[in-house]
Every structure is written in C-alpha cells, then in structure tokens.
Image (cartoon, rainbow, N blue to C red; front, side, top):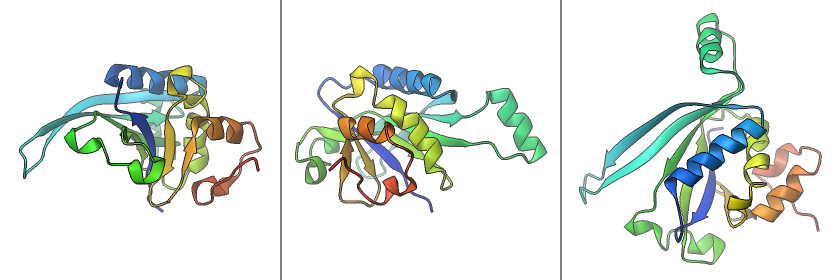
Length: 171
C-alpha cells in the first residue's frame, strides 16, 4: 500500500524554515533522526514556473547506521518526507476538505511501506508542537482530515492501526 500522509498548513504566515524546524523537533521528540536533507527544484513543463522543495528521510537510526543496515540487508524503519512552499495554485486547493481557502499541501510523508505506526510516532509529536496547532492531517484518497486537537487526542490513546483508513474520534 503506497499512500501519502499529508500535513496541510495555512498559506498565510507559512515559513519553509519553521516547517523544517518543526519536522526536526518532532523527529527528535519521537526518537528519530532527520536525515539526507536536500533542496530540489522542479520546473512545470507548461507554465515554466520553478518550484523549490526540500526532501529528507526520517529514520529510526543515524545516517551511518542506515547505510550500514542497507548494505547488510537489515530492514530499518524509515520514510521519506517532502516540504514544499505554496504556489499560485495552492490558495484554493484544499477548500473542499477543510472548508477554508488558505490551506495547502505543505508536508508529505511518503515511502512508508505500510509502516503507519512509524509515521504516527512522528506525527504524534509534530501536532503537539504549538506552531502546528492550526495544521490538519490528510491521508491521501480519504474525504476527511484530522485536526491537530484530534491528532493529540488520538496520540493519547492506545495505538489503533485503522487510523489511516477510518476517521477515529473521541465521540
């Protein structure tokens, strides 16, 4: 199952640097490593507009151990992430889901290989950070989101693997 778990952030006041800092803080709080940060550029073939984005990896081990484990064929829990800045098309891109016009696809967790517990470990810490209290979590291809408050509540419960395909609430 290859799905993305997306954090929606407000366009107004968005900061690329603060978002990266939140990812790094949440990773540390979740006992993870934030590795292989790389700034990339993509040019839209139609509009020729250039977009900058950042890619990285969240891992349960350091970069050196990740490489060593890979060479030995040892599975290491990890996932990729992308942070992107809003574009002109972002303004109304998620109004169908959060009923507000200024949210966009800011942070994408990908290459999870079905290890949603690993992603949840990170997200539980991410949504507890004060700077992320207005963010939403969307699991790609669903028609609902989790608010920061809902994620904080969910993280206070025993882990439930169905959180990615069924909206879990306190009520």
